Length: 232
Image (cartoon, rainbow, N blue to C red; front, top):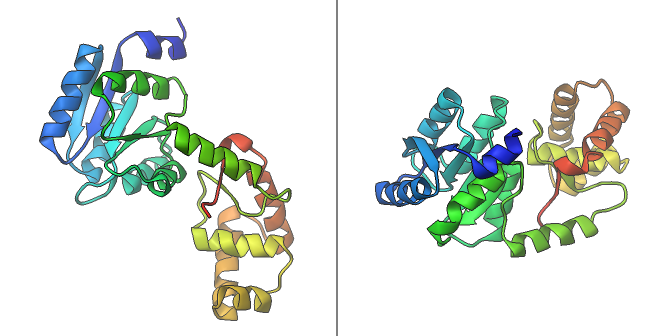
């Protein structure tokens, strides 16, 4: 039996991260009834990162809002550590923008806290098998975003990238052929600020010129499985 099949039918090990002990207990009990073992619990993002790296579970269920470190930041920390364990976020708000932030940070899914707990284990097994776990409404928004993507890829962001959102803005304008003064005017910043961002982009992409940066950006955007459209 391969890993994907086993994750759907066999034992599954999970880490639960939520600052509410009552919620953690309810989730743990619901998962246990469906054969999912909670191997560790965290009450904040810092502990969630530590426990995930230490125990290497099959999947992580993480609340978005937690003390010390929120869930989105925790996911980013795991990505920075090259951790490929799938993370499913729990959000108290049915907000698509927050869901998109979670996905851009590196989560493989976002569930509302109002979800029927009897469906939770199925969602986690799907995530552990490599599937995205998102609502139909969010899936529709993502499809619309892809349909509206420019042919040249401008505005598309790889989910996992060392560039900041502002650096991507600058890189997009570089890809359009704008000069430093033009970019400064467009972003309402100084030319020196633009030069600083360009230097950071070149360094992070490992290239030496703007032309090479444009080529690198095109390469990053070429993998459809790793891109996401910027929210309007």
